[in-house]
Length: 72
Image (cartoon, rainbow, N blue to C red; front, side, top):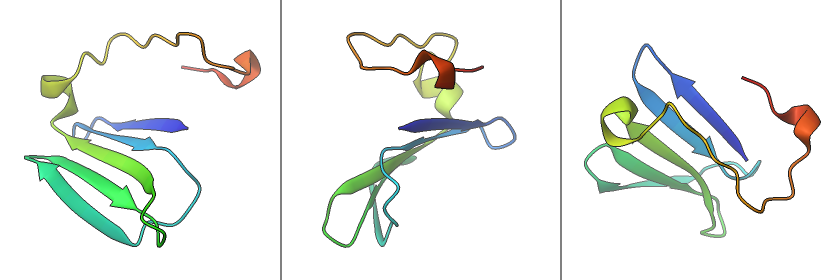
């Protein structure tokens, strides 16, 4: 999983899979879900992320995390 924030557009993309997105659905204003060819969710795109989310804090709870890959 990879979280990518783009300050120039104030958007957050949460990449859930390395599979290619072939379909996208806007499920709410500025929130798009991307799907692969099997219909699995591969990513979420959130526009105006700083207005919809608390971006100043990220908590990982009970996840099997490789701490060497965590960086700011």
